[in-house]
Amino acid sequence: MADKVYIEFPARIVIIGFGSIGQGVLPLILRHIGIQPSRMLIIAADDLGKKVADEYGVKFLQQALTRENFRRILDVNVGRGDFVLNVSVDVSSVALVKYCWERGAMYLDTCIEPWAGGYTSPTITPAQRTNYALRESALALRGGTSHTRLPTAIITHGANPGLVSHFVKQAMLNIAADLGVEAAPKKRAEWAKLARQLGVTTIHIAERDTQMSGIPKRSNEFVNTWSIDGFVGEGSQPAELGWGTHERNFPRDGKRHEAGCGASIYLMQPGAATRVRTWTPKAQNFMGFLITHGESISIADYFTVYDSMQPVYRPTVHYAYHPCDAAVLSVWELQGRNWDMQASKRIMMDDIVSGIDELGVLIAGHKKNAYWYGSQLSVEEARSLAPHNQATSLQVTASCLAGMVWAMENPNEGLLEPDELDFRRMLEICSPYLGPVVGEYTDWTPLSDRERLLPEDVDKSDPWQFKNVRVF
Ligand code: NAD
Image (cartoon, rainbow, N blue to C red; front, side, top):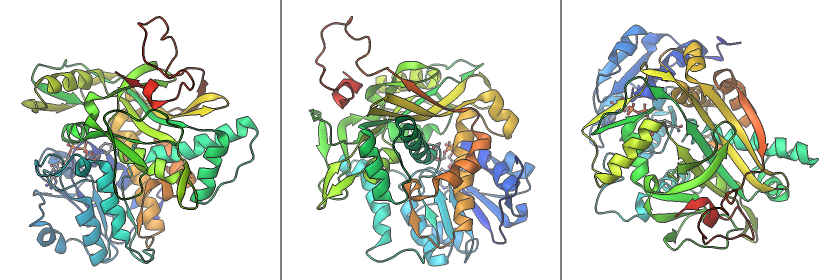
C-alpha cells in the first residue's frame, strides 16, 4: 500500500545535509514514519533546501558541522531513542556513529564520509584515501566485543551502496532457481557458499543513467543527477574493486592493502579516469567508470568463502557507472582541468525532460553466463511516486527510508552494513518506488564483438577476467 505508515516514531529525527537526497527523503519519511514535523530538525551548510523544509513545516538550521562544533550543535537536539540521518557531504560518519552511541541514538548514512578534506589532504597516502580504509575505520567501531546492545547504526544504505546488496541476494536466489539448485541461505557463510556453488566469479554494479536536462551543460559547469561534491570526491579517489579468487592477471597498477579484511585492491589512478565494460538490459553493452564504492568491498567480503582462515573463493565486485551524459562531459572537462573543480555546479532536478536510471547488479561467470537484476526507474514515474525526486534520487531515498524503518524496528543491533540486513524486508519497502524491477540473462561478455578491433591483449581462457573488463 503506497501510503502505509510502517512505524510510529515517538522520538526526534535530525537530518544532517539537505541536498538532493535530503530533500527527496523528507516526503518519504513523513509519509511512511509516524512522526510530527515539529519533532524533526534539518541541519545543512547552505540554505538551498530551506524552501522544501518550510513546505513540510520542518525546522531548518543553516550551519556547517565541523570536527570542532558538531557536539555543541547536536547536544541539544540528539538524545536517547532519537535518530540521526546523515545525508551530507563532509561530515564524518565515524564521528557521528560514535557520538550517536554516546547519546543512545540510532544512525543511518548513505556513504562513509570523512571530515572535509579527508579525500584530498596531501599528507595522506593513496591507500588511506580508499573506501577500504574508510570502511575498516567504521567496522573498527564494533571493537572486539558484541556490539548488539548498542543503538542500531546502519552505514552506506542508499541505492549503491545499499539497495544493490539486496539485489545481489535476490539475483542469486533467482539464478539458483533457474539452475535447479536448492538454496535457502540465511547466514553469511551460507550465502558465500551458494555464490561459489553457482560459479559466480564477477559482480558488476551496472548503472546507466539516461536522464537529460532541457538545459545543456555549459562549459566550466559540472552537471549531474546527484551530489556533485560527492561524485567528484569519490571519482577522484583511487579506483577500487573487490578482488576475486578467479583472477589470474593482477593489474600492473594494482595495490593490495597491508591490513584488514583484504577483500579489495585499488588502482593507482582515479576511478573517474578508469573505464570498464559492462551491460544492462536497456542500454546493452557500454563503458562505465570504475568509481570506488563501499559495496565493491562489502559484497566481496560478505561472499568470501574461507578454509582455515584462507580465502578460497571470492567474486570480483565493482561499480561500472555511466552517469547521465552531461555528467560524462563534466568528468571529461574536469580531467582536462587536472581535477580542478569547475566554477559552477548543477544538480538536475525539475529541468530533467526524459530518461531512466537503470541500476542493478550483473552477476556473471555461472552456467547461464550473466544475469542482470535491478530497477529501471524513469523520471516520469519517479515524479509521480514522490515529490522532490527524480529517478536517481528516488532509488536512493527509498532505500534510505527502508533502512530507517528497519533500524526503528530493530533499535539495538549496533553497527551494520547493508549485506547484514534483512534483504526481503528492504526490498518490500523499496519496491513501490523502484519502477520496473527486472531480471534478464544475457550472453554478452566483456570479449563480445571485439575480434573486429585491432589485436588486443586479452585473456581468452575466461571472458570474465578483470583484464578483459577494463578498457585500456
Ligand atoms: P548534495 O551535494 O546535493 O547536498 C549535500 C548537503 O550536505 C547540502 O545540504 C550541504 O549543505 C550539506 N553539507 C555540506 N557540508 C556540510 C557540513 N559540514 N555540515 C552540514 N551539512 C553539510 O548531496 P546529495 O546528492 O544530497 O548526497 C548526500 C550524500 O548522500 C553524499 O554523501 C552522497 O555521496 C550520498 N549519496 C549516496 C548515494 C547512494 O546510493 N548510496 C547516492 C547519492 C548520494
